[in-house]
Length: 86
Image 1 (cartoon, helix red, strand yellow):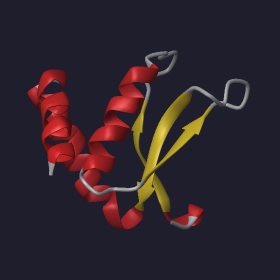
Image 2 (cartoon, helix red, strand yellow):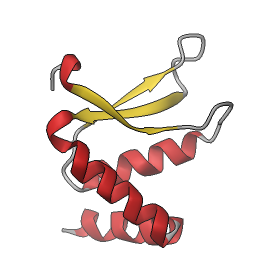
Image 3 (cartoon, one colour):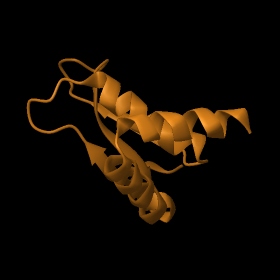
């Protein structure tokens, strides 16, 4: 995946510190075959703040995130678990 083709599909809100939320969204996307890149703040690079994907995967990634948010976190966890079984 070329870095100039990457688009941000998920970002923690300003001041957000919930690293688990980023990891959950990343897991959802990757379990659906979408390669991700995590981007963090320079002073604390181990805490990702954004998830980027290839421009070709942007629409599908946004759709998956929107569906997961609409269904709630429990449904997102369930979908991730089911896809890992396949």
